[in-house]
Image (tube, rainbow, N blue to C red):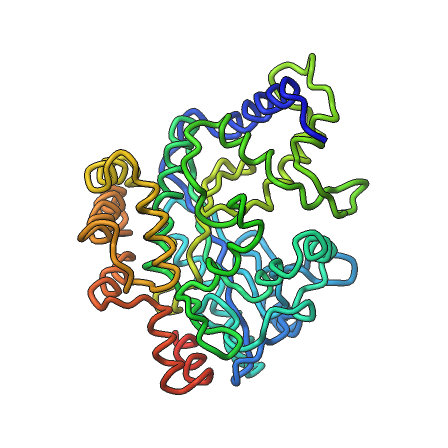
Length: 438
């Protein structure tokens, strides 16, 4: 069916009002930070491990942790400080911490979480990698963690969904207030290529060089590619109404009825317009709102606002080397803190129409990493200058966490390029040895 224009407009306004209300008028203190860090876990030869082996010894080592289950399946173990979660692929574990006022606090909490995890991994003769993709095991249904909703998404998306079984990202969440949300989101999406150039780390998978420095971006961008469902959008939203309009006109993949996820199809707005929005006031009722939240959870743009905590999630970075594990979080925090200065820099260096230039750069950075020609001479260094100044102004020495990016820029090589060089010297074992270094 085709959505009724008046009803579609009414629903878009209602959802936009509800969306905006999830973000505060002003932040209460320093901008807080959270982190979701995914790590491949492999055998010494590079084959994916099964993280189900980790749960029992981790629970034994950390008595405060409690298991979270889906039926008989343990999907996470957690306490008040950390959550260790199963990812789409059973060879990937996610470490979730936050919120915290500072990057230094996040660093301490992640390292405290990694200590027992690494001890368990070592005892099992496994390797936890600071790398953005499984280096040897291919993306197959057999690698997928048997969560019910993952099976539904494989059904509705097809083979492209399976890239989630092998990839490992490093996502940072940052508080936003209502007034800055749209402009900061648009800016961070615009600068996706900068993050990919500096933080790409998935150049080898399936036991072969992929031809991309960020295979995550290259392959996951295949998911409904014509509608920019994953990665850098085609252009800015400009306001909340435009953002909601873009989201509701995406294909509906999954819906939940009576507690069970099931396959869906058609545009979300068409399904929504089966309901009458008249007389509902300024806020969408809970049922349609919950349906919208489930729908937009499976739209994976590089920068996406999250209503649950009033944050911006930045998700285009691959997992970083363990010795520089805060690099992506620091860059993300710097981009958000420096947003006004960066917006001025973009206008000065790229003019009034920067999206075409930055989309070209994003494509080249996905393929070439820091070997890609910058959108303007010295642009990445200028971005880092603004990020360093903004983090320094917070007063916690967080700007020092950007140092790995300076070294990468000086060397002209990001972690993916280093991993590829190791692979070319000694195959997957050399890559595993490099990316398991702490």
